Length: 114
Image 1: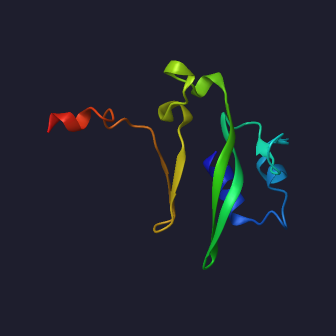
Image 2: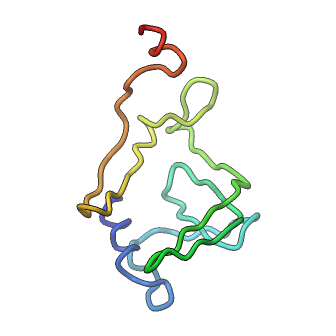
C-alpha cells in the first residue's frame, strides 16, 4: 500500500477522488465526518482536537473515538501487534518510506539488564 499512500500525498482531495485513484473502497464512519478505506486492517477514527499550520504543512491532533481492527492484525489479548500491522513511516528529510516491525526488546524489562 506504499504506492497508494504516496499517491494520496501527491494529489489534493479537492481536485482528485483519492479512493478512485487508489482503488480503495470508501466506508462512511458512524462517528466522524471522514471516510476510511475498507482495505485497511486497522483504522483509528479520530475527532480533530487541534490544528497547527506549519508553513507548507498542516498538523492535526486528534482524539481517538473508535478503533476497528481485523483479526489478522490482533495478537495476544486481542491487541493490535505492530509486526502484524506493518505500518509505514515517511521520512521527509530524504523522502523515503520505511517499514516498521522488528522487536528491539520488551518495555519495562530490557532496561533492568543495566
